[in-house]
Length: 222
Image 1 (cartoon, helix red, strand yellow):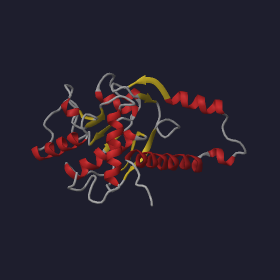
Image 2 (cartoon, helix red, strand yellow):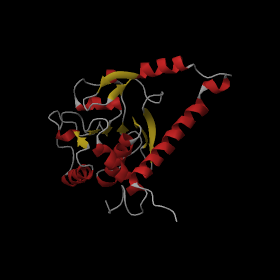
Image 3 (spheres, one colour):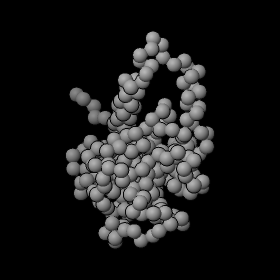
Image 4 (cartoon, helix red, strand yellow):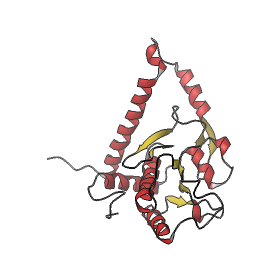
């Protein structure tokens, strides 16, 4: 008799598959394949040191100087909606933020390609503001041109209801920039530090919803 998988086992298997896919893509596209030998360990370490900044974003996650470059931030697909892909931190953060993007598409406003911005280089972001969480891959801006920083009232009441539903579902893990003193209604970001158990629990729930017919973003069951 097959033993049902626990939520944690499901999440770990999903993360393993995603990580393996990314690593496989790196190998297939790497110029090193044409060489008899790959990069030396010291070279890899130096490359990673250039990517990892050692500086935390306001929510406590380390910022990175590049995406898709052997760090923790990669371009990830957003299944089922026209957005296609967003640069976010791999693993539990990815699971949660892409869920927020998909729910926004279904419950707030339909999105198109280019409407969502994830990671941004630290040098392009204002220090100390929640927006700078994008440099750690733990925040996304949804249609920032339509909802500019420091401007409130960009959503209709029914859209605000959809946003509040998303935030309620994500408990204390995700915060909306529209609730900040320095308002940014386009911004959604992880509001817990690395290793927080609330993030893990929420990510496990989202994975289970996505694997269960009638649940997940785009259904009325959530």
